[in-house]
Each structure stands twice: as structure tokens, then as C-alpha cells.
Amino acid sequence: MLYSNLDVSEMFVDRQSQRSSMHARHLNEQLVRVLKTIGYDVGFQKGQGQYLYDRDGVRYLDLLSGFGVFAIGRNHPALRQALKSVLDSDLPNLVQLDVSTLAGVLAERLLEFVPYLDKVFFAIPAPNASRRRSSSPAAPPAAPASSTAPTPSTGCPMARCR
Image 1 (cartoon, rainbow, N blue to C red):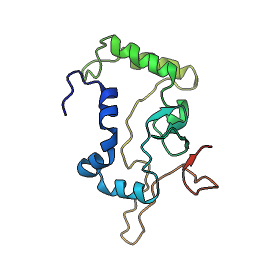
Image 2: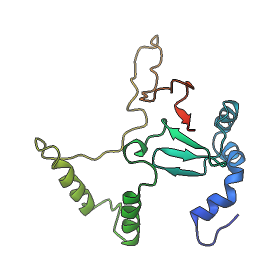
Image 3: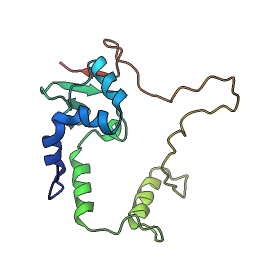
Image 4: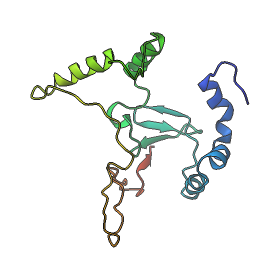
């Protein structure tokens, strides 16, 4: 299915009923089976703050996701406005042989909170940087780092809200 204007919201609405079949076909068939097995193939439709909403409007408290969700929540109004501002500004971004004005502004603001430092280093962590590696073949593999604790009532890191 082609979309003439790349309207992501339109794509989501049009294709959300095919989410499991698309994911199984093109991404990770096992994840689709696991979600169905544990009853979490609920089809999340919306995210606001720390909550997710399924296709029936049931609200879930998300204690599993990361990537800024814990710090600011999903679709935070101030962040949405900042992103719109950047997208509407046609800024020169991701230039390899240049210095970034916005990186300088961010570094300056961060350093205001840690006056004992004078420099900031921005980095993208490697996928396995949080895992301990052992060179000994006899050592068992280290478990992935996780700060997610199961909820007391479900034993699951995502709780259905009432």
C-alpha cells in the first residue's frame, strides 16, 4: 500500500489491524507468538505520559519501556512542541564535518547543573555495553541489565490499570 504524503498517522490507522501479521512476516515471528501466549497482544493504540491504551481503551501503566518514557512520559506537550519547532526550522543536522550549535547549547545547559565539570561528551551506547562479558568459556552468560521489577499483583512489568 502506497501513501502519497507519508502521513504516519494515516498509515498507523490503516495498517494497525495487520500489526501482528506484518511483524511476524517482516520482523520477529517469535515475539508475536510470545505476546499472544501471555495475553499481551492487546494492540496499543495510544500513549500518554506513563500510560498506554489498548484497542478497547483499557489503560495500562507501563513499567517496562525506556528511551525517555520514564523521564518525561510519552507525547509530552513541551517535547512535542520542541520537536515540531526543530522540524519546521530546516536546521542543518547530522553534518559530519561541522560543529553543532544545538549540541553546544545543550552542553552549556547541562554543565550549569554540574559546575565541577567543564566538558560534556555525547555518545550513543553500544547495544551490549550494559552487559558484563566474560572471557572464560566456563562462565555462564551474564543476564541483561534491567531495572524493571515485576508488579506485585501480576509478576509482569506492565500493569493493567483499573
